[in-house]
Length: 303
Ligand SMILES: Nc1nc2c(ncn2[C@@H]2O[C@H](COP(=O)(O)OP(=O)(O)OP(=O)(O)O)[C@@H](O)[C@H]2O)c(=O)[nH]1
Ligand SMILES: [Mg+2]
Image (cartoon, rainbow, N blue to C red; front, side):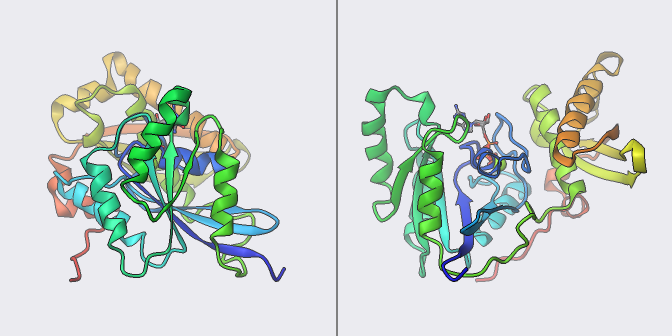
């Protein structure tokens, strides 16, 4: 096992570029919530992939963006902290759109790192471009970070994914694995369950609610043969949003619950009984006490 490679790969990039999709795809199992809405990921999460010759510990981060709320500030802190001490940084972008200010900002931040690890520029969503569009768009992104090794692929459909994996492994140091080979993530099942409930809500709800939504698991009990009981509360910011989440005759909440239950069951491989409630926590995204209660730890900046 002397040439076994092992190390940490931080995946950074704007919201919605496909960071969590890529990790789920490489692991071959869903451990992270994914949705068409930006800011789906709200905390750092490890995705651990062990092959016969390597262990890659992916660090999924909340998308980096310009903060508007205290929650936004937390998300950026999480992303920046994820960069310290990793072996490879995979800067993920959405190649179906031209680079914008946020991509440039992140590229600038990466170019300034004092002890840079290996840098890979990952051009994702290749499936959305015609063959003619690929080369000129690639050049625009490469110009943002010329020092990086550039690869394009489709996290969702698979094209180019194995070449990416090979390149990442090549950049890892020769080292014994940090985690047992069967461990897939560092989050507890109840934390993933909370994320999957929020993912289901993001899928079904209209624009005015999603970012004002937080999920707290109130109870998670094993019930032997019958599976697990999960009780959770969905917090919204305003009374008017509560009605939207519950829906007419409770229909919306039922839809969210049934979709989330299926995802949690397939993640955990057993039956789940899921009970959801909705409560108002006024303006929680700007309330440090409430942010802490929902599991976001805001840290003071060092510097
Ligand atoms: N067509 C296409 N869509 C993709 C691809 N990868 C991801 N997506 C879609 O992009 C959307 C966002 O994916 P996520 O994985 O949640 O993105 P993220 O970067 O983790 O987003 P945040 O957690 O908000 O920072 C989802 O609707 C995915 O299905 C791809 O290769 N091709
Ligand atoms: Mg994500």
